[in-house]
Image (tube, rainbow, N blue to C red; front, side, top):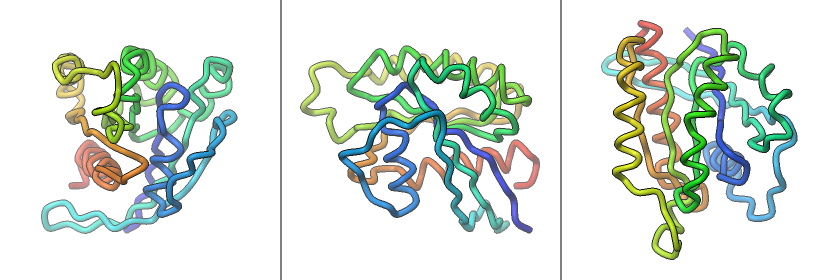
Amino acid sequence: MNYFLKLALLGDGAVGKTNLRRNYLGQGFDKDHHMTIGADFAAAERELTIGDKEFAITYQIWDLAGQATFDQVRSMYYRGVFGALMVFDITRPSSFTNIKSWISELEKHSGRGQVPMVILGNKYDLIDSAEDTVKQDQIDALLEELNEDAEDKGFEISYLNTSALTGLHVDEAFITLGESIMHWLGKA
């Protein structure tokens, strides 16, 4: 059976959402990428194995613009989302601080409330040269807080360091989210 899972890539502008999606789709890194206007869509067909079960999954990946000017437009793209990759730039703490706002926006407009998600600290390839970074204890505190509510819904929110440039944990992010969604839906 083939499952169609609508996913959202969320986070502030310029955190690397589009390049994460491009990397996952095998399209490479685009250093000259311009900001997403409203939303961008792509689909990816994947096989997902959970335990002894195999699933044919089609991810409908909605890459939503992170700039405040697109707030009103974004709301219509959330409807029907099964899960989200919440992306922040590990070298830009303000983008981490805004994760809770992104989660609230998703819950308000998804039609499902809280859904499975994976939080991604992107641009990890820049961490050694950055002046300021998000600290692991900040990430752990956020996960602990978010998982208090998520456990009641039947899933756990996880975290991965990613790099759209090097491919670090990009595939794992989509696999982890897919597994979480399938467990949440009672299929795995």
